[in-house]
Image 1 (spheres, rainbow, N blue to C red):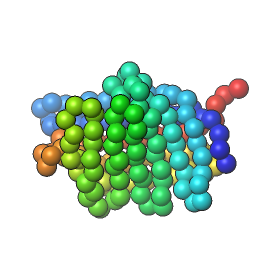
Image 2: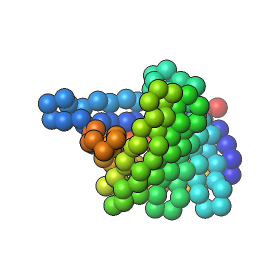
Image 3: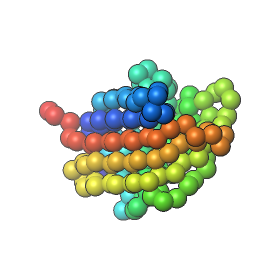
Length: 143
């Protein structure tokens, strides 16, 4: 299974009660495939996300989701419910250590598409930066 799809990504970040909610939505063509039992979603970032020139891949590995970015932004983040993972995040300026603690990871994908939802806390260089939710929907391209 290997095909082109339409990907809808919704990101939400709550920095603090006083700062309010920051939201972004991106709808983009992408690629959907399966390697063994793992599903992979790949798409190119846009100017809207601030990561133009970067390719993002989400890989669903059983109960966890791995997000990898290559290009102008390089990172590798693991979302696993109840676990904290550290990774390296490089934007071309100052590299950072990023901590990701997922409180919920849900992936309901089939060969026809589906949905991924992840709720997580993010910390940069050991400083809390907010509560986050990412929702990714994968659907067939309309002819």
